[in-house]
Length: 167
Image (cartoon, rainbow, N blue to C red; front, side, top):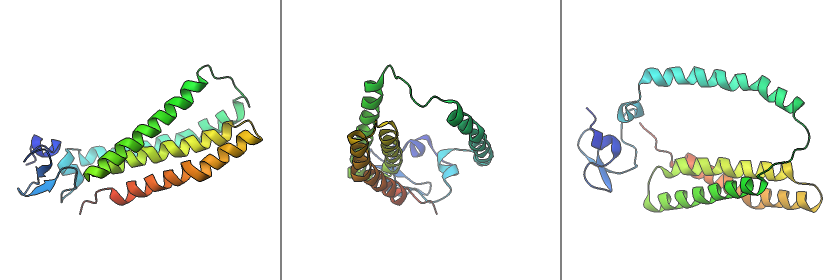
């Protein structure tokens, strides 16, 4: 039986938790056995979520086609500066959180690295797609190719390589 302390990672002190067989492990590290047992997620829930998410993703196809054909080519945004500032703040927080978690050896760094990678790709996409042209477009492409996409690739690699594998 899994205890609340094991699920929350607080058994045995701040830096360690106990595995179901009583051994100590570093908090945030994967423990042996299926993830569903350790996290309390029902296998039925996981099996049902897959087809639902797949169906929702496929249902987005006609919506995307409609948006692409019906949206105007240009638009005025009332909070343009806050939009970009907010995105960059989220990227910075993601980098800080990932760096801090990596420094601690915490496996949750894979989650923040994945989210930060996605934010960086979105930033590169929107920078290049909303650039006015000329020097503005060249700057956006240079930032995308020289900073945002390489950093997104590093974060994606960290997310993939550090994700705990359950055997």
